[in-house]
Image (cartoon, rainbow, N blue to C red):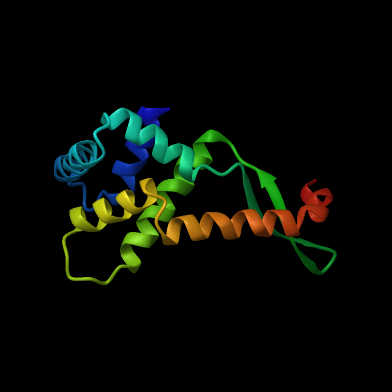
Length: 141
């Protein structure tokens, strides 16, 4: 589990095949986080997964000419992908003139401290949509 999430994070920020550069950045970030929180990097990665995991995804289904928002259960692989996707989107939204390393560090630190974050907001909206549209679950098949 830990290795899969780590690889998803690497893949989310990989640009133009510069794998060594992004590995160095991610390892620096987790080193800083472990120093800041006084916890090992593996524990930080697990707690990051626990705070961001979601078990239901809402998709649009067109049935008989009408569109329905339908909640679907998702697999672990999809959970890892969504976590890395949300992180990448949030980092790209941040237009501050700071390095990628600092942007990722600030976002992960705010998630671990449960400070207001775009990723946590997106997770809450997905859960709200799933709860509101749970009556449409019969359109899954």
